[in-house]
Image (cartoon, rainbow, N blue to C red):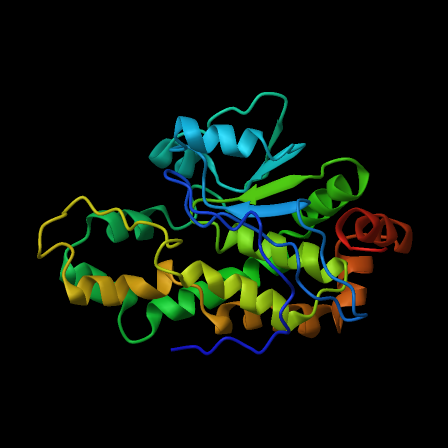
Length: 274
C-alpha cells in the first residue's frame, strides 16, 4: 500500500463533504505552496461526474458560487454515465482529454469481458503499464487542452470545478497541472491525488456481469490498477514534464504557452495573499 507523503497540516477542509450521487468531491484549498503560502479555499474543486447528482447534491453544488465546470470526459463517457446535471448560472465547458475511439474495445472488455479476457489485457502488470502510458500521453499530447484550462482560470473561470468520470485521472492531471502552475508542492499534490483511493470516493466499477463470478476477488484485483490512484501514475506525469521540457517552468512557458503575467493572475485567483 502506498504511504501518503508527509505534508504539514493546513487547517480544516470546510467543503470536503460526502455527496450522495457525486463521487470523489473535494476542495483543494489549503494545499501548501513552495513559498509558504496556501491554496485558497472555495476557488478550485474536483470530483467525479455530476450525471447522477441528486437534488440535494445539486443544491449543495449550486451554493458554492461556481463560475465554471470543466468536464474532461468524452462522448463515450457521456453515453455511459449521462450528461451532468445543470446548475443555474454556471458555465459548463467540455474539454475531452481522451478520444472515445481510443481503447474502445479495451474498455468494452473491462465492462463485459470474462475472466480469461480480463487476464489477457490486465494481468502481469499490463493494467498498470496502460495507466502509466495514459498519464504520460495526456501530459505530452494534451498541452493545448491544459493551456486552455489555465488561461480560463486566470481570466474569469473561478470558482471552478474540474471533473472527469472518476475524478482521479483526467481531472486529477488537470488539477495537478493547475496546482503546479501556482507553485504547490509536488508532495502535497500527490497527497491530494491519493485521496481518490478513499473508499467513499472511489469510482463504482460497472460490469455487465454483477454475479459473484463477474465481480470476484480476482476480477476486482485485475481491475484495481484502472480504478485506483497510484503514486507511480502521477510520478510518470511529472517525469514526462521533466524529460520533455526539463522542468515545470519550461513546461508551462513553452508547452502550455503560459506567460509570467498569466501565472501571476493564476496565483492571484488561487493562492492566499498572492
